[in-house]
Image 1 (cartoon, rainbow, N blue to C red):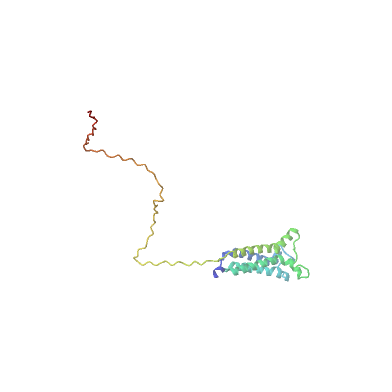
Image 2: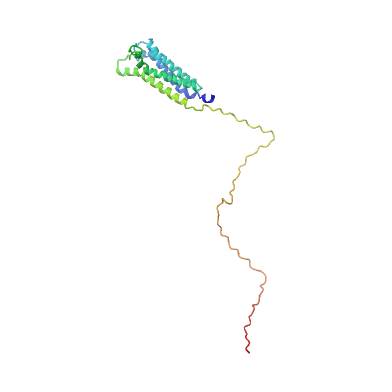
Length: 220
């Protein structure tokens, strides 16, 4: 069971660093954005109000904490908690301004984009809330799937002890054995053998007289 909860730290390291950077952006951009003419109302640097606390500071801190847990976690349950925390905070970045009129007398919290041009107002809306939350949810979801895919954790391999051999004892040497094919498996080969001719007799030739048959008839 303990092996299934273990994981390599490298599985959540990259996602953790990325989530920490996104959390810092979400929590600090309302305070430092006015220096770069990128702000929501009130468009003054380091201006604090309750809307920024609930919609930007707290979710930014939660995303940073979730990324930090992913970065240092060596167990699956801590890494999963960090990924879920970051995903929930990212969803709040996107949905918070939309749902805030429900408890704020039908008035949206967080102010409005402070730029004069339409393009910059769109960029402020995306960078402060909508796109920021979507990116955080995507990164946290990718980390969540990567961590959940570790089914068996880290398998502990026990070292195999070497067998002690007494001094002076010859060790057995492994000799490769040549496989000999049996007669049944060998292919049949047909070979023409020369006909043996009996050797000539070297002794004297013995002549056997032929037997003559008597054909004389006696006439009386």
